[in-house]
Amino acid sequence: MDRFLFTFFNGEVMWEYLPKILSGMWVTTYLAAFVIATGLALGLLLAVLRSTLSQKMPAPLSWLAEALRLLIIFFVDVMRSVPPLVLIVLFFYGLPALGLDIAGLGATWLALSLVLAAFAEEIYWAGLIAVAKGQWEAARSTGLGFLQTLIYVVLPQAIRLTVPPLTNRTIAITKGTALGQVVAVQEILYQAYSGLSFSSNPSPLTLGALAYLVLFLPVVVAGRWIETRFAWRR
Amino acid sequence: MAAAGRHILDVRGLHKSFGTLAVLKGIDFRLRERELAFVIGPSGSGKSTFLRCCNRLEEPTSGSIHVDGTDILAPGVDINAVRRRIGMVFQSFNLYPHMTALGNVTLALRLASRKSKAEALEIGRAALARVGLAHKAQAHPGELSGGQQQRVAIARALALEPKIVLFDEPTSALDPELVGSVLQVMRDLRETGMTMLVVSHELQFARAAADRVVFMEDGVIVEQGPPEQVFGAPQQARTRAFVARIDGHR
Ligand SMILES: Nc1ncnc2c1ncn2[C@@H]1O[C@H](COP(=O)(O)OP(=O)(O)OP(=O)(O)O)[C@@H](O)[C@H]1O
Ligand SMILES: [Mg+2]
Image (cartoon, rainbow over all chains, first blue to last red; front, side, top):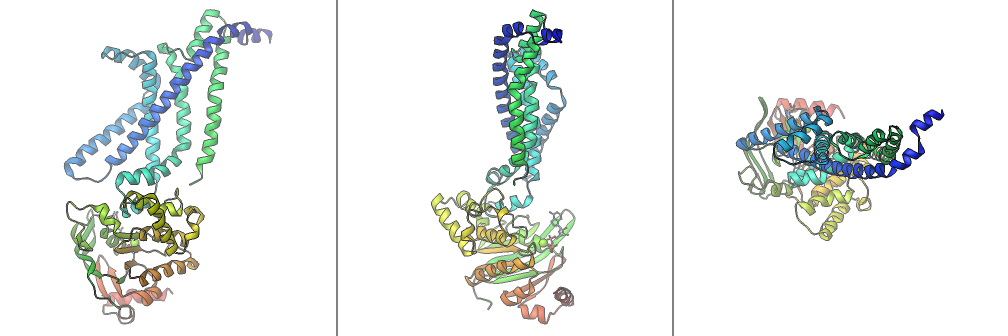
């Protein structure tokens, strides 16, 4: 037992690496915040665009719309198929080769944002088509335009339906910030891991796990609350 | 009491197909100002499709439709402006569940008619009062009975001061004891001289309130005339058969 405590809960080592872990927490927090903001916003934009492109329109325009619509679906399916870690590494090494200077932080942010956007788009889309057709018809019959109907009538109902699955997906992808470790993003796992290498003691890792718990447990609990609150009320 | 007056709705040679399925096969129909016409017919005969063509919720395949003098199928027509003058009431109410009754009624006033907030609220409250639901302005649809929801939906249509209101089976989703309140609102509306086109099988109401009954079958108007004629002495065998059938159900 003593050995276990010495190995994993070594107070001295923990104290030594606490500042590093704290700075890692800060990096994880803002990286996650940016990923959530970009991912959810881009996902919503794509879903709205897809819905707009699915409208009936005259011939030459309709081909363009169909092409764009298929492009969105292709993007979404690709982003949902490739493991986020692969994307991060790909962006980290690939984009500079294309002349686009990107740091590990940028690559991680971009990869996770795109993945979240793809999943979010599918969730928003499912929500949009789950709203009864009669809602569209009622609104359009009073003279509302397509976008007005989408924004004021359909989206509010769709988003209510999407809150529970979106919350889950957002939490899952946000935890993916730990993947940034492989491209030297100095987030929690990176700090904990380098602490482990320097001290030859896994206590920094324990501290890292605690840091994740402190950050994400409230989010998960809040997610559960949001889920129950939005799941049935319509 | 078929009033003289200009035609609010003028439909000629209306055809509508869904792919290869021809649903409307040449409808000619005119409705005068202040007139109330009842459309009856078997399921699948194209009644809803006919109504939905009149505000272009369905795009007609061919034919012409004029509403209050406007060719609503003309290429450059502002369909949203046209629709503001054509109220529509649906079988399933289709109220916006996330808004209050007043919110439902004022949304198009704000966004489509571009009324000020104060003006929209005033018109909205008046519309709810017309259907006897002024006291439910702040209720959400989920908190209202079916009959109340349908009356809010009627208020939503009325608030825009339409030239004509289309009703697609407004009472068939309602429990029998709630039907009366909706029919009463429609009766009041008729008193005010609203032009109305109603798809419904409320025969008693048709007998009492309709100027004209239109029998549709298989995408065409088989027969039309005053209710006493269509119900009492139908000219066509098909009408007779249908009337006998639905009368037997009551
Ligand atoms: N969007 C659509 N796509 C394909 N077929 C349709 C569509 N809408 C209606 N139809 C078909 O058109 C025919 C007429 O339908 P419509 O709803 O107008 O009939 P109705 O007279 O209103 O019937 P009911 O009394 O059952 O409401 C039916 O055969 C129906 O299946
Ligand atoms: Mg119908």
